[in-house]
Image (cartoon, rainbow, N blue to C red):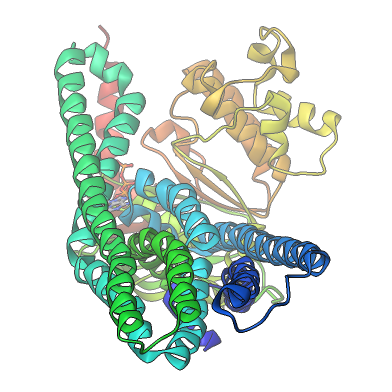
Amino acid sequence: MLTLLQNKFALSERGARDLIKGSLYSALTDLSMLLPVGLFIMLLDELLQPLLGTSTATPNLLKYALLVGVVFVVLYLCQFWQYSSVFLSTYTESAARRIHLAEKLRQLPLSFFGKRDLADLTNTIMGDCATLEHAFSHAVPQLFGAMLSTLVITIGLLYMDWRMGLAVLWVIPAAFMMIIGSKYLQNRAELKHYQAKRICADGIQECLETIQDIKACNMQERYLEGLDKKLDAAEQAHIHSELTLGAFVTGAQAVLRLGLASVILVGSELLITGKTDLLTYLIFLITASRLYNPLSETLANVAEIFMAEIPIARMQEMAAQPVQCGEKDYRLNGYDIEFDHVSFAYNTAEPVLKDVSFIAKQGEVTALIGPSGGGKSTAAKLAARFWDATSGTVRLGGRDITTIEPEALLKHYAIVFQDVTLFNDTVMENIRLGKRDATDEEVAAAARLAMCDEFVSRLPLGYHTVIGENGSVLSGGERQRISIARAILKDAPIILLDEATASLDVENETKIQAALAELIKNKTVLIIAHRMRTIANADKIVVLSDGYVAQQGQPDALLKQDGLYRNMVMIQKQNMAWSL
Ligand SMILES: Nc1ncnc2c1ncn2[C@@H]1O[C@H](COP(=O)(O)OP(=O)(O)OP(=O)(O)O)[C@@H](O)[C@H]1O
């Protein structure tokens, strides 16, 4: 039962157990709502008896006053238990779900993010969690509770008088059949609504991200027209989905109310023909008027549960994604990085790296060079296990890196990428990310080595200036220098520099090269650069072209060979001779 609920609703074991508890409390609350009805019937019975001549006793009002008090307390307690059980457990489960999702995202390989668009992912984390939170606090336990309480009442009514019992109950399967029958249409409408909403969110996100280019190309009007159409489509899809839901739910609720009419008809007939007594007839009338209330709400909830199937499916899809795992405690024999017949493809069958083999030795600078799209950045990312090789092995210190837990592995790496990522925080904290426990003095020393001083002194609050989302108040070169300072501060044994100095002017590049020369002593350095001067001091060159290793060896030796390396050096020399 627990496993079934876990699988069906993407719940944790505790969540499934809480759902059962919440459903039982909901059933108890529904049943407790019949207590005032019972009390009323008792009083009615005592009032009717003198009229019917079966007794002369008058009702004991004190007894009824006490019973009203007891019923009130029971009702209060049932509501209180149901509320605290259902809502508290739902929000606890919801918090656990969000943490679990975040934890899962942390462990997923980057290939997963390459396949998903960001708006969809954000929607899964924020929107889907909220949808499920609402469904499990307002719909699912109430539905199960109503089903349970209806079952108990059904047995009681059929036992009292099966004919009037059937008159009350026939509408329940009819109404549910109507809702279940409409499931396909409702799901289709909701899926269309969700897709339209996602397209809208994508459009808005794209607009915000590319606003600079849209303005530069004078495309505002055309772009906004497109966005307008997407918003209209989302609005239409939403109206359509609400109408589909509303039509079936109100239809089913109307069918439920027919039960009262049928009980009046059947009961009157039985009463006239003397097949039942007045009290039984009244019991059925009053029960029927109460029985349909929780059921009526439940019908609207059934639709919400159907709709929750979409986010549940997405949660399950996320949960089923394979994560990168490995050992946290391991021994390395130095920090040589070895690519051993490595091939790799992103999403397509076409490999980006093909049978790549080379060793980046500790204490040496190994430069990856080659034409654009040759696979240099991909190789660097494979070296840090951002992705796992499709075939072949990447080793660090003689150990296959797929056997090492990614976070434990990354402790050995300081990385400076082409695309720098900065956080909306101070310069100081952005650099401190390299080493969380670094003192302000250590951060400032790293910043000085990375030539940050000069531009930081111009910021209003110096190192304590908040630099905006992704360092929006800084230039490309300044952002890159912060990223280099981070790497210097981390002082890891392996350094990956992917176009690390690409956004710098020649003067700053020369200064930073000097700082980097200090940083990289006795470390394993893998450097990617287009400018030959950036890799002038490399110990080894690996030329990657079209995913293959075209050449590798010491720079001097490669210069003597007629190959890609010599061509690139010659072309760059010619370019430097040009002037505008
Ligand atoms: N995340 C990705 N998903 C799919 N394909 C990708 C991805 N990243 C890169 N590629 C493709 O892989 C190939 C190699 O890209 P890579 O960035 O490794 O080349 P590179 O040699 O570093 O290029 P450049 O010098 O222009 O930066 C290219 O064809 C590129 O389109």
